[in-house]
Length: 167
Image (tube, rainbow, N blue to C red; front, side, top):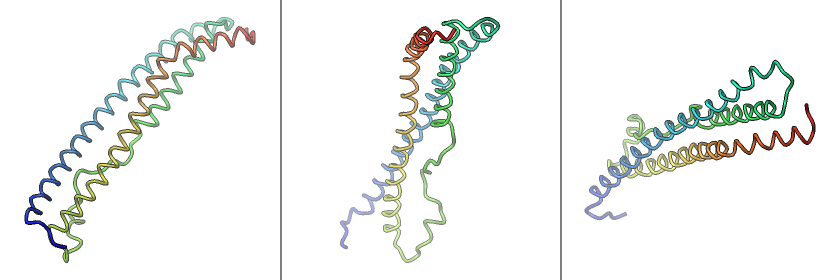
């Protein structure tokens, strides 16, 4: 295959561009971790507040508000568990660079061929990091929407308590 005389310059440009993109993905991944921590703080605050209301109420007969608070505390617990499961557990994230020994495995290839292959590998790593970030963002956004819906959970649980006369 005949390559244009600017091929080495194009490879250099593609490598630099790919590395910049990977560095941006690392910054975004770090930001996702911070957003997950902030969201977990909101969840734990809600859980702690409802638990503080529930604890002294356990000495009396369960009424509609206490039942609603218990349901809401369990709801916050489930949200926190989901958030931790989806965003805090350590999962594979691509490295910005290829391992040095992998670059030496094929001595029969020219430097330009190796650089070209590394650019293709970099594209795979970029795609993997995009998927990783998208999954974390989706989980964080789901929990945030669920937090906004927490008053609905409280109201529905209170209505169900009244309908089924659980007292």
